[in-house]
Image 1 (cartoon, rainbow, N blue to C red):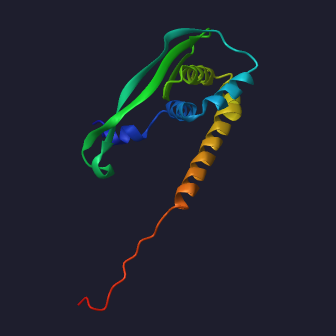
Image 2: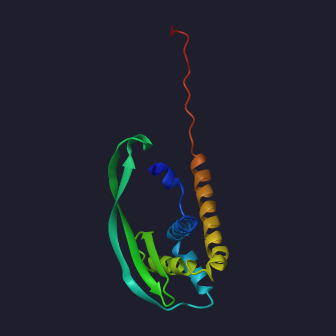
Length: 161
C-alpha cells in the first residue's frame, strides 16, 4: 500500500530543502549584495552556459480567500539562466525582473553551493548574512506598515433595541 501524496510531500530530501532555501535567498537578494559577495570570492570558477540569461513572463496564480479556487492574478517579469561549472555542478538562477547579472550570480552561487567542499563555507559567508538582511528588511517594512494602521470601532447608540 502506498503512502498518501500528502505524507510523501512532507518528507522532502534535506539536500533538496536546503537548495530550495538558498535559491530563494539568492533570488530575493539585492544585486549589490550578490556583487559584494562575489567580489569576496577567492577564486572565480570557469563555467559554460547551458542557457544564457533570458527575460520572460510568468503567470501569477492566486486563490480566492487564500484557500478557494485558483485564478490568474497577473504576469511578472522574470530572468532565468542555467550554467555548468568546470567541475560538473549545474546552477540555476530565476529572479524577478530583468537583471541578467542577478540571474547569473544566483546560478553561480547555486552551482558552488552544490559542491560539498565549498557549501558549508558559502552557507556561512553568503547565504546566512543575505537571509539576515532580508529578514531585517521585512521587519522594517512591517514596522513601517504597522505605523499607519488604523483601528476602527463602532459606537453603539442607545436608541438601538
